Length: 138
Image (cartoon, rainbow, N blue to C red; front, side):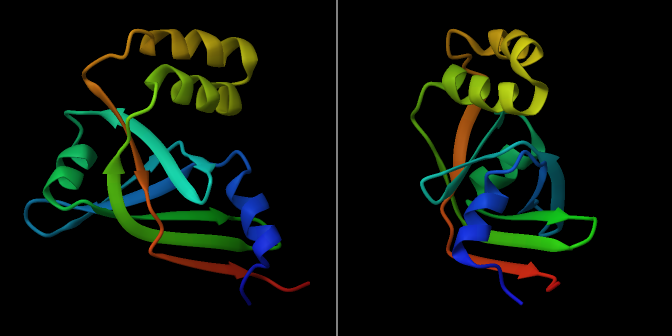
């Protein structure tokens, strides 16, 4: 059974780590856990410009993210779509995520490393082309 639209929004705004999948230069799938922020119907991320995931995205700007709840009742969301680099203040995005994932004090401390818009880090988003959700019925 699919999630209701209300539950889908709620689920995507919970603090969870997602897995993003890209395709490498040899055509092999590559997956990695990553923080994300769901905002206005799009999933936002950040990563280093030299990471394999970013190099894969530059070659093939499309990705899939999978988010799942591994205890009862089981739920999952799979989103795929084109990836776009975003022009937004990196520090603000990182701060929002870091506070969400680490809590206020540790999150602010973590985000300080991203002040001054470091050139070796990129903010990007997946623009959903398809969203598939599942929810176990009670």
